[in-house]
Image (cartoon, rainbow, N blue to C red; front, side, top):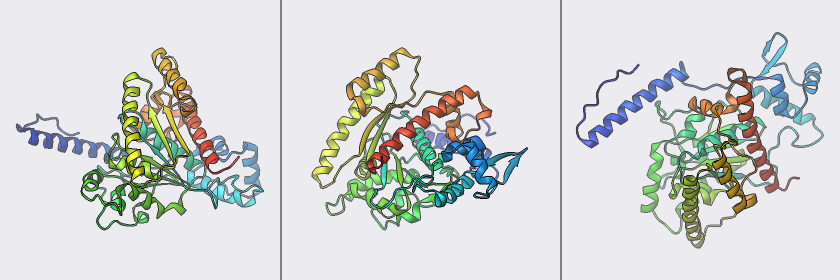
Length: 394
């Protein structure tokens, strides 16, 4: 434990520095304890019923393909029960796809003519569950066989941490900043890192990304406008992915606007409180004004979907339900049908930098776990429907 001693600095600047050093030291100690001994996250295994559900088949079908030798036995078999790693499920998809009569039955990746889906999650308000929603969508789609890239545009690096990379612990690799900076940018392929989660890669972030805001003001160039930089970076790796999920900072600056110019769809998470709804209204007012400015500057903004997602939803809380109904009445189908429930299961998982998909069901109250997972599954399924619609699939 870090000894608790009084803060000694007297000048505000020195006090801020001392507080920062103490916090960073505490964070490093916490993360080292959480991820010891090698500072890496690992993904749990999936029991046979979960595996069958993820593959979209029955338990009987799974037993059949094992008995026929179509797919190998998982390495983890306990008392006759099979437990699969995510990598084994990924390989099973590839094997089953080769024998399937319907293309895309097990690997629903985009095909020729289907454009890369780039979904940006954004809002003015911190605490709207942007990062939480982003990581849950990333895990949902990766588990279903999509190739997912998570782009962390928040200099705080919350999404980066949830992808198993801790900026707080000596991470000095390339970040998204290196791909979009104005001087000697690197290729996006050199920035993208595979994660411990099969199917999911990340373009990580660190505090240095905040420099993009200042540099964009200084390096304003009509021939190479700031709002093209993220779009151009993604173009360098688009053949490798089906879906890009962008987690934006809680502000409307150059990073968020550049993300908007790169996105094919926008998702605005908001909590059902009047304060958050009012903040979102101000955010969208400014966003609309900035959209008009960059359109006048030559940007083409075309969104397949522009949706609101209600987060921290409490079905038993009357005022929040009234506000949710108010939003649905105002914006109708612009508000997603699915909502992200306010759940201790999700809160507890997030504290450990996990999604609900990483949590073992038996480690918490099953009803609580099921409600949380069903909520996130519903959001993922609704987004998947919108993606398939954009691709022209039935």
